[in-house]
Length: 498
Image 1 (cartoon, rainbow, N blue to C red):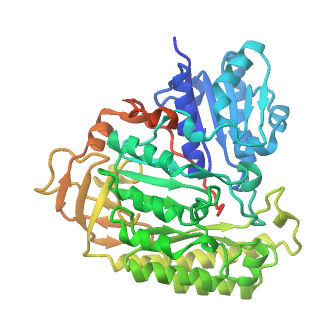
Image 2 (image 1 turned 180 degrees about the vertical axis):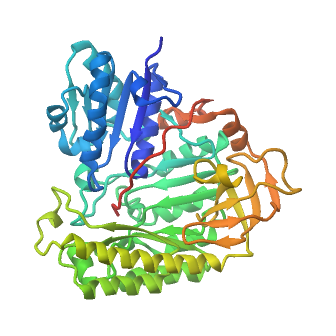
Image 3 (image 1 turned 60 degrees about the vertical axis):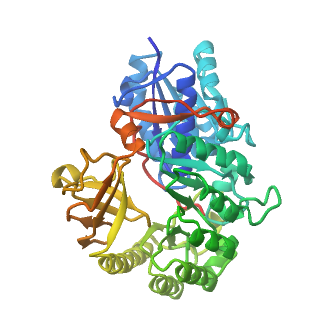
């Protein structure tokens, strides 16, 4: 019988996409997913880890501790640890958890099947951590998570030196993909019914620096607009220091680029931004928002904010609140600063007491929720187009609603009823409805649907099929196959890296 696998993913979108690559490699090597069973039942359990969030190591070793007794009962079971925490801790993992079979880093995710086989043959742990990228991840096969929405990496690594961030030391310097390779992957996904792609990079605005074209990202957005069948284009994350007007123009002038922008602020205090080495100031950040809204008045803008950076004063924090009031974000990922070993900020003086950070955090969250609620209430009565999603509404079964994302990225829980419904509404279908209620973190549409369009993505989601891409070298020669695969376990955690 084929050996089974399960991948547990922690952290950011980069990790979620890396997991798709890991799954693709394992399946190419003959492994099969565990069909929703627990990790205890899999022959191979892979942890794709994050080192950015606080207590990331505690979470990992807690999971490994649980599997220790399983491994003792099933000696042929294999446990692999990869991702950012593996890159950082290296051989420390097998010292603390000697029952782990494989440790691999962010630069050699393509080595996993070989390392598993070597560990099984040699009956000892294999630890392989490379200092630079072994192969660009897009050359690796991938089993995609979604039938209707896909991640497409345009670059890996980061050239910035933010003092709070450990990502550059774990992911390396920025490496850019050629535009033709990116577009070939997008076209391959669209050919399999995917309606929406999200372009991924630690700093998408600096895309093209490696091959000498500072306007490459705006050109890439416009090129995506030429792809028939691609209905929605998103991207994450841009860095305010590298944001150029041509990107704003491309967003506004390319119909399938969504009116949505996630741009990390981190702090509204210029003094703190300098200490963070963020290389922009609050006035620059707000000017970008003004330009975006001038060209796209209905754009939804979200952000990341860190509270309690070393040396942050009450005056600094008030500056952050002032920027939040002016920016009127539709949502914000808010984080309490925590020391990350290996970052310059970890050694800064004036580390703030936990109670001070918590109190400021609570005030920020309260203000942001008030603003988001006000902005969402303004949308009541508006007609919206939704891409129906799966796993977005935790209470959908209780409320008899379904969930989807509007073009601006807002989450909408809707009632799938009315004369416009054409058979069953499925994830991947497109519907139009009217907003009836606005909450701080979502919208509700309990009116009858105004339209319902069945899609190939919906057909594939209903049949349990997911796109499988064979890597860019094959993508350029033909379209990827699509096979029946279960939906992987949702990622947990998150990170603020840009």
